[in-house]
Image 1 (cartoon, rainbow, N blue to C red):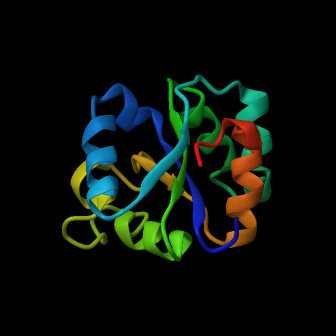
Image 2 (cartoon, rainbow, N blue to C red; image 1 turned 90 degrees about the horizontal axis):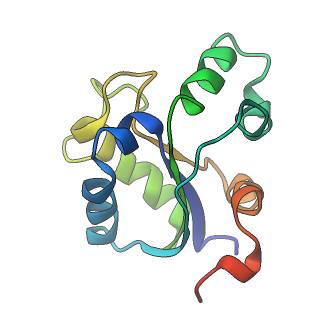
Length: 140
């Protein structure tokens, strides 16, 4: 998996705001291929476990609340150097600082409601992908 796959989540603000298709089209235009996807509503337990790495940070509780506020869409994406390529495609966490044409510059509402999650390393991409998808779910 390393290097060629990453996980993304279209967050509740973008999903309920009707931006899912636009975000997916942008990612596909940048060469990403969807290998697994599902729409779901995270429970507090699921969101808490997924973002456990941030549990000591001041924004953790707010992040869990936000991620359980509506449906989201986790996706496993494939592309060469996928983690770095996706992080480039989505832009800075704060949409005011995101480069032109990135997901967050185009579709995020704020730093906290920033439309999309992206794995930050190959190791986390593998862990995060397994959180949402069994290998049998992947289209190869």
